[in-house]
Length: 512
Image 1 (spheres, rainbow, N blue to C red):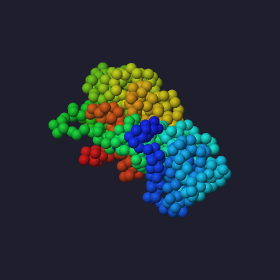
Image 2: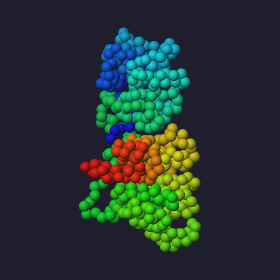
Image 3: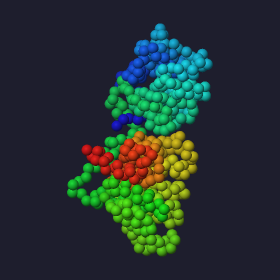
Image 4: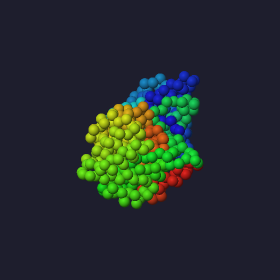
């Protein structure tokens, strides 16, 4: 599994490498050299016009090394000191090594008038202004430079992270370089995976710079990328002598008049996800619609003696279904009327087994968010950004700007597993550990996709997976199924139900 580090973890890794005998100057030399080797594999550098934008820190030092190496490849190289002279000893030493190499070094103040036009006509632009420690917004004077680098007809390559992005959060709060490639040193960084920074990175390539692999693998990493291994760990081999009871009973309180499809998608996904028994708890009025599409489920049908009041038979059936459940899904297509609200609260407060709360369940929670602090059962919440905004009282824009922080803060405060859906879905648990998903596509941005995900998480919970493990595995499976649908049917024509039909082939491959 590829390590993903933030700024603090990256610095700690470097410190540990030095303690183990590495030399910082050598690491800087290796980093700048690795960036140029990447370019040499793809492009002819002889006599090409190269501009290297360098900051005053160690990222600028990497840029000075790259400039020297580009010159050794026969390129015409200009270095721009965007923040003046280096402020670290190592970067200063690397700048001094440019003497008598033929690399032209200019201060930004002396080149500002013609720098944008120089960038527009360059063959290669290397961005080494800000490194992993950058926070906040780049100064306004850099905006035309970053824009020219981003819009150049040449190739723009960022060293470690594009300048202007927050390595830890993925936030972009001001001017930013839009790179064609980002060469990341030793490991991936949070910002390579989190929007909107991810959209600034172009193709990300991780290169070694001389830090021992055992040190990298042992470095604490609070963020992981979901992958096939994530799913494999959640999908345990089946015992030949097992029965349906060994794979859990999933209770699904889903659907309402006009929203039978949400219940059907959730239940069908849970069945495909391997739950031993799926009990769909829904109004009798939509039974025929749902049962016609999910014949393998069992059904607990709800009747009302008066508005908002279940019949005695329905109350007994509901209580029995709750008692037998190994896991629950609440909310897909449930509606938020008085009857649904009462049912939701009854199921939520009476449960001790893990619960997935989705869609209208989240909308009902938003009316009284503090109820989460009184629930006894382990919880997995699956909001999209709009629902997350309602849960937190923040704007959607703020949620999207700070996706990882928002997910972690909510998970910690309410002691839940939080699945913040969207491009780069994030799964966060109360400890602060999180996963970011890289599968999925825009074809999944339609009603019903979330119902499929909720059913799949519920199925894994019913089979005994821990909540965070179930959520992370289901998110990867869901996105991978979506990618296969897009390849087969197109992002335009694919439907949420198609995701479910991709699961058997996916499970077959993982099983092998």
